Image 1 (cartoon, rainbow, N blue to C red):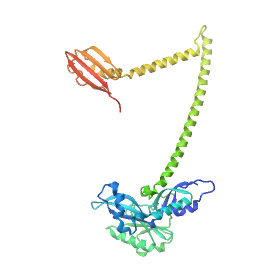
Image 2: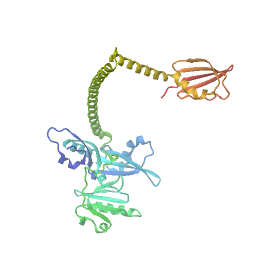
Image 3: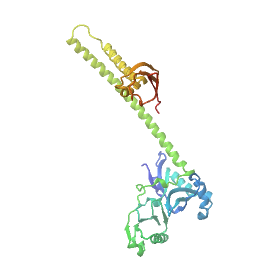
Length: 368
């Protein structure tokens, strides 16, 4: 079985068998170890935010900033101010989660807080029970995990904060755990979270900065596998083309033999050999290709582009000079209004008039 998405604490259900190699997986991680802080976006350039934000949050997290991992989230405008969501996790927790995944034979490509596995709908707070904790999702990229008593308290505060109280959607095995004041206004069900099929927003991936190498290794391995498959496909493709060419040549030889036999039955006397017919056909095709190439020469394209401008000109061609990229025409008796503004695609046109002779110089423009 190839594991792609699951919860970190469910990896023991997918232990590797003998001889299997490490597999890549995107993992949901416990939200109770994750905090999200909303701050005013720094006025410094955005490239310096990751250096400044740990010190801005130093008083909030009450832990040494060097021991914490910071992930910048989406920014939004609130009351005319640009605010930024910052996810903070202990580096020790990040290393522990990676160790758990490695022991299960899994290479983590992404780690996302598990409250984001709950469905989100505008104007609704989603809650789900997981092993003694409530997961709560309140917006597109925000939520939390807390024990039942604390979760009910925080949900009540969220519901009384706005003018219009949001609806509640609660999933838990025993509805009697829901307080009376919240039960009547709630949609209640006993559904469990399907971790493998829940939508995972990779924009909330915690594997950034010093922890990003984990996903890079998997990408490199995946790229090498794809490259090997591509090379194999090319080899098989060339082999197939070679065999097809052999069969095609055999078919042509057979048709030539049949045509020669039919000709000799109808016409008496000397007949052309198949080799001579083929040689004549190849020579004819070569001449046609040369003719096509000559039509693409700069002088031919320049003259073709001048056709519409010079029609009904009544002028006389005095001289014509052409090089690889420049064509010069000297014209006499050019009618008034003719060749005043001459545009030829792919060429820059210069026009000069002296002693009754109009000189048009067309220089080929390099195509970008």
